[in-house]
Length: 286
Image 1 (cartoon, one colour):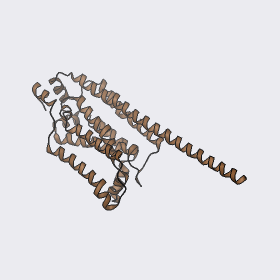
Image 2 (tube, helix red, strand yellow):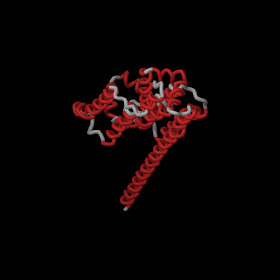
Image 3 (tube, helix red, strand yellow):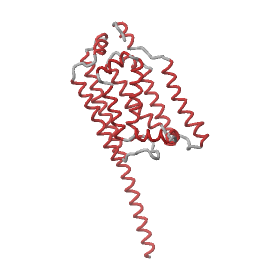
Image 4 (cartoon, rainbow, N blue to C red):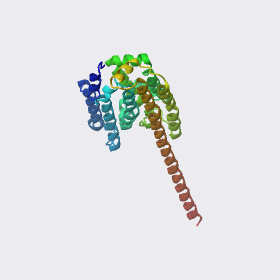
C-alpha cells in the first residue's frame, strides 16, 4: 500500500509485470487453443469452432488482462472506485465472454467424470448460481473482509478469482452452451432470472452510495491523491448501482428480443406448414 503522495501517484501508472499473471494467461490461451485444435481433431469431438466463439473467448481474456495487468490493478488498491470498476469488468464483461467462448462439445468432454458433471450441474442451477454470485459480491464488501483483502496479496488473488468464477456461473444459465444433463432455461426463464438476480447488486450499490465511508484503508489512500473518501465510495457505489444495473437491463433486453425472434420464426414455420397442408388438401380434393 502507498504511504505517501508520491507513491500513490506512481501507483496510478503502475503496470503489473508479475510473471505469475502472464503464466496464468498463457496457460489459459494454450489450453483453449489446444482444446479447439489438436484435442478436438484427435478425439473427433466436433467440427471447427466458430469464429464468433473464439473471438468471444479471447475478448474475455483481454478483459481479464485489463483487470490484472494494466494500472487498474494498482488503482483498485488506492481508490474504491477503481476496485469497483475492476470487479465489475471481471464479473460482467470477462465472465460472460468466456462463457460464450466455450463450445458445448468441449464442456461435455471436460464433464465426462460423473462427479464433476454432478457438481457443475448443481453449481449452474439458476438459483444456486445467482446466490453464489450475489453472496460473493456482498461478502467482499464487508468492511473487515475488504480491509483484509487490501493487506494480503493472497486474499486479493482469491477475490479476483471468485469474482470471475462466480460471474461465469451466473452467466451460464443465460449464455452457456447447452450440454446434456445440465439445466437450461427457456427465453422467459432467462428474462426472469436476470431481472431478479440483478436486485441484490443494485441494492448493494445504492447502499454504498448513501452510506458514510466504510473502508478505513481506502480513506487513507484516497486522500493521498486528493480524493474525498465519501466521494470515492459514492462513485464506486454508483458504478455498481447505475451502470451495473443498466448493463444487466440491456442484457435482459437482448434476451427479450431473441425471444420475440424465436416466436416470430416459430409462427412463420407454423404458417408455412398450414399453407402446405392447405395446398395438399386442395390437390387431393381436385
